[in-house]
Length: 303
Ligand code: ADP
Ligand code: ZN
Image (cartoon, rainbow, N blue to C red):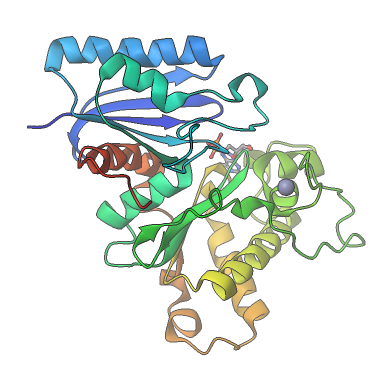
């Protein structure tokens, strides 16, 4: 059976898997993110070792933090571009792996990769327009529109949308280095931590923080619903471990839409419309595996 390599490249860790399919993962490792050279030499070492034991991989897939150049015609395709993680700026992720393994390398954002996995094997099977959001160290979003992973000018940066911020209710200025109080600046994990002065996983479920968090996230969702018309919204990431957020978000989305979208999915089945990932924490790395499978078809994914 064909072997694939998947890499979920994150700001704190790289998760690497070798597998024959989503339910047939042969080896997995987690590598702490340091400089590109140190991190990638560990990644390459892991796959080389595995290849000695199990044979060559047919292709490699990467779901990465960004921003990343995904334009197949660009000379810097597969490069990390202007990331706040400065030593990663202009890192040629795809090129470094191609040089070592001489196989096709597919790349997309971490959230598009997770969306692809959910579409193939999880909560978005059979859907052609949906979004996948992660609420963690940052806020990111990706997904499919009409059956294609969404790209465009670069790729969506759904965390950086601007939403109403009532500074009387919530004087916290936000933490986005670029925008201050964009959605990510107000509602990512580190923003919750800074606003309330405690780690968000220590805030009790009934704390006022969660109602405020749900309101901000719901504002984001209403914007995505009105612009992209997703058939489903999948919400993952560390902050969404707070299960009570789902019902609070659904309630706020309904209230904000105010019966404008008169649709059964929103009016009667919102519990099935705004949901956690079915592949839970594995969505990202399984998505990377799926990107490897697509890359081996020798075509650019969703150009
Ligand atoms: P990353 O975004 O780096 O991939 P995560 O999705 O795990 O990682 O997000 C990390 C963020 O989520 C941190 O800000 C952390 O405080 C927050 N977080 C992690 N677990 C929980 C939890 N159980 N409840 C609330 N917040 C959490
Ligand atoms: Zn921002």
